[in-house]
Image (cartoon, rainbow, N blue to C red; front, side, top):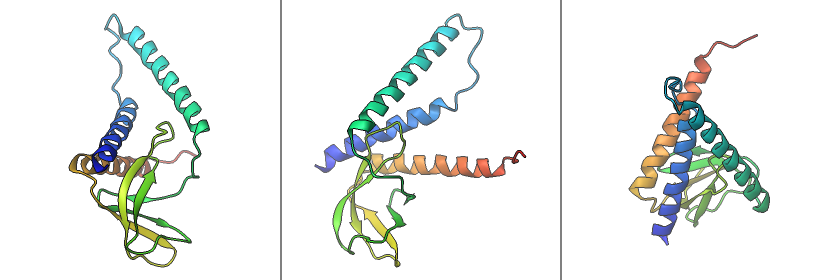
Length: 153
């Protein structure tokens, strides 16, 4: 059902949010008596999550990586055999390698140029759409920040 898909998509997006925030933490408080213990636990938990996701990834077939333009309204990608205009289906989007569960987004194919597939999302739900917009915004901001960094020779 649409409700079940939306709930699963929210959990996947929340997991992605948590993983992306992990890399942006401030310097740990060295004065805290438990700082070192918390850092060790955090490292071990992340290691465990990485191992578990690798095991799951091996047991589930995945399509190779494909560049996709995504926002809360829809998605587009290059395709030699795009779906026919008006076709309905579920677009599966893997948002991070360590998150094995893909987003399952109800979509309808819309007209696109030759060699391109384009879909608009149907029945995403406001919470899922908001999380997707935040994800896209953060990645775009990081890409711009990365392009402004001076390159090392």
